[in-house]
Length: 243
Image (cartoon, rainbow, N blue to C red; front, side):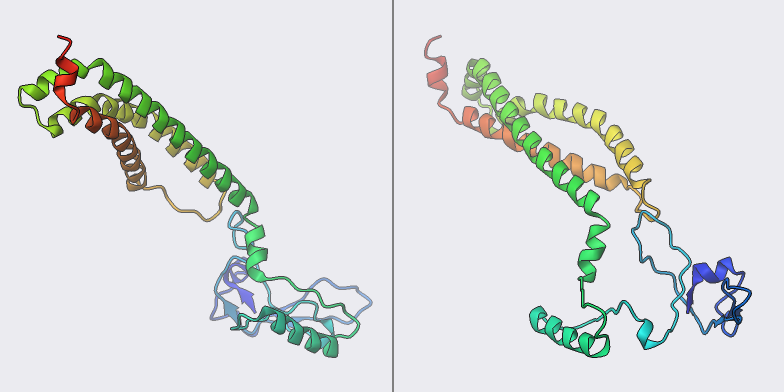
């Protein structure tokens, strides 16, 4: 069995490939051996997605030439499964030591660098968000203290909670918006460069950056609003009594 990529390299198709013979390299003093194509299977990537699909041949051979077997089992008792497989292996291949690995772990190893990078980015992102929230909270508290008398006067004159919160929050929202305008092009460029390392990759969509921007604005607005609401509901008499 060969895959579609191999058939294309040979100038064959799934219709005319069956029955064709392939002659591997051989010694002139040995009899000529060949393999016959019996079918073409669809392409699948058995390597990392960093690499394109390579020509693949699945060849039937004698039992004594077997060195790897893939076993699919629907069970959660892996210890018992491995024990049974070991007994079968030793019975059929007594000269070959039994060694095993789980396929999902083998696949995961192909992307270990990406997993490590993701963990690092997630950790630094959480730290950065925490530091930014502390900074925003402190700055909003300072601004609210500076405008305490203004807030008191506006509240006495009839300004409601929504107006006061909007008054204290709009400057921070504007700064967050400017930061997003600066950061999004750089983030798009960095992600696009990273995706170029994969032979098979997704395309970046605008809504992903819009969602990230919305989350950032929500975090900033929530952080600032906590202090803004606290200042807006304060008794204006206390802030104006010294006047």
